[in-house]
Length: 108
Length: 138
Image 1 (spheres, rainbow over the protein chains, first blue to last red):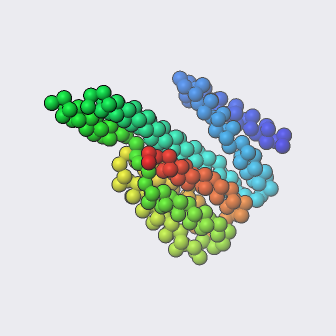
Image 2: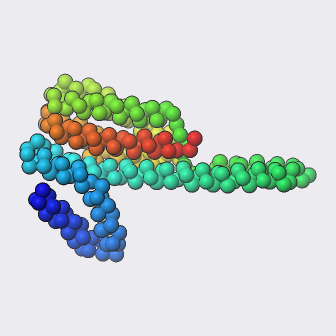
Image 3: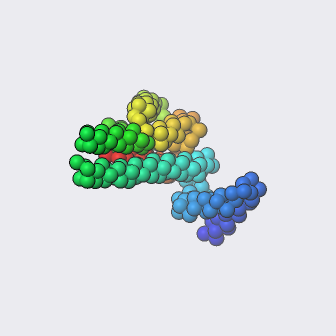
């Protein structure tokens, strides 16, 4: 597993380097997002590197799996955004319902 | 005079609340479409260690059902995030079910370990669509 640890450190260093060279103004956010992505994906990627080394999966399949993590992350972000909107509407609705019922009680 | 005014005020407020809601409402049919597509997709993926040609009909059917779910989602108000999710899943450049089917078609057969890994990932992807639908206002 020493090989995986070296590989993982290389990936982390690569994210830092990418952030510093291409996203200088938001580099801290990019590094944080990259590390979060790595943290969430580590177990799967560790398994896939073993399977690649054992030729249980080929290079194309390994690449496909790694990139699928990005697709999953995009879908997850959209879910979080949609649910946050629904919760905001629910809170707003609750407050306004309260205003209406209080209005009826006080003024009618 | 006072009562009529406040009734109108309350009615107007209610209309504004409803009109200002930006999020979609839970839709049972959309939820069922999502779940059925997930089950069909994973079931079809499970056969990807066999020749693609034997399952090309099922693959085409699955693509049509995904398109139906997308078109249905497009018809629902305030449904931007779900629409975007389907656009990602439909996109052959994204690594989701369509690109999996394209890879299967190109290689004719895929490795079992890859299939299991890909099923796990695509299952998570469909869960994002299903969980968003079930998280909408009811």
